[in-house]
Length: 219
Image 1 (cartoon, rainbow, N blue to C red):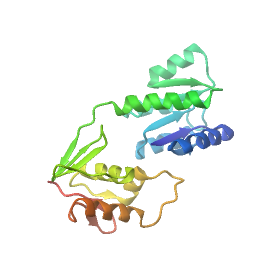
Image 2: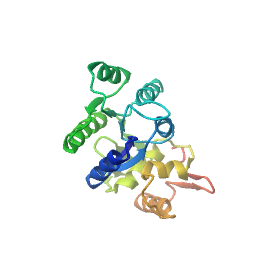
Image 3: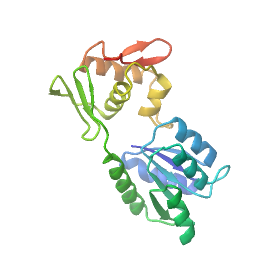
Image 4: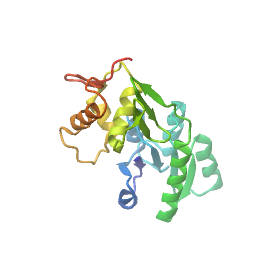
């Protein structure tokens, strides 16, 4: 799960990131609202932890612009602003939940799990492409009726490609889907995932567009 943490308190940000990493979360951390809004408009995340008192752009404005762009990303506001009016403003602006500082890390994790469950329970259409059936809800993949076991990153890569047949996806875009900013990525990691998918399905599944990225042809 890829999490965007937006928090300008360095000690708290480090503490949250350290606490979440052992849970399997990839945590990308920003410290101002303008950078957060840019990241949210350009990259894919599963959840945002958003402070309200941020430099350059307040968290409430980030939230309003996120929702104005029809982005349904789950947002958990994490803030010291505990007045009822502040909580109402945050929820009305589109927050999915509201956690007051100081908080117990166990409660933060529980609220995150609840929001992620809710998000993944939203209907997502199953994809069928040249004998491949991919179900985002159950994370199940089959080829010509036979179940195929895919590691998480291969599943994400296959989903991204077959959801957009005929469209070239750049290396940068695909790496954003698969990896967090502070993850060390081998220079040929994407090629390795592509190679594995071709081997598990068929060689012509993914086409290399030299100097740009990868695509699957329209069925």
